[in-house]
Image 1 (cartoon, one colour):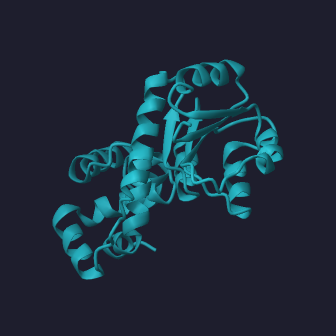
Image 2 (cartoon, helix red, strand yellow):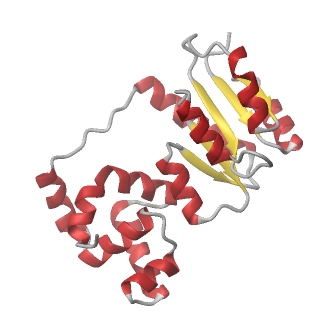
Amino acid sequence: MKSYRVIIVDDDEDILDGLTAWLSPDYQVKTFDSAESFLNAINDFDFEDGTPTCILLDFQMPGLNGVELQKRLKQINLEFPIIFMSGNAQQSDIIDAWHEGAVDFILKPFVAGSISSSLEKLFDSTINNLQYRKSSDKNDQLIFDYSITQREAQVLLLLGRGYQQYEAAEILGISLRTVKMYRAALKNKLSLHTLMELGRFFDKHKITIEKLASLK
């Protein structure tokens, strides 16, 4: 019996076939061509069998899209880790997906190895049960005081709330080029290389970032 379960929901038959062929040697794989077909089959699963489960979910599909399915699953208390797949998601889409609980976001076209890498990291973290220990406000504030400026915190705050870079520039009254400069500084100082990492960091430190940014 394979130790991990992967559920793939995508309306692209080629992706379903390709990922099934790639992942089946290592995982229990179930595929669905729509959010609705997955929801209709939920009662056929034994989700209490203790098998760690991840959902590979297409972001844009006919009918219910990926985020709508994500919300529907939360409503029925099935909150499995979700890795989104998309070919044309916007920055705000990625941030929204992260706030709803996504663990990763992979852009199409992708190689199967990138999916394997994300799954391995996810299931490794499940095994290790790594827990984030939040710093106290005082120590957290000290960290930020020495690492990022107020303006960088303002850019981080707006991007974390889902604004695109040009929108952040308009709100702050600075150029898009300047916002990109601050975004690069945040990447270097805090190792926030992807939007998913930025969203995760923002959620963990939201109160402190708001205080440092002085931007409500």
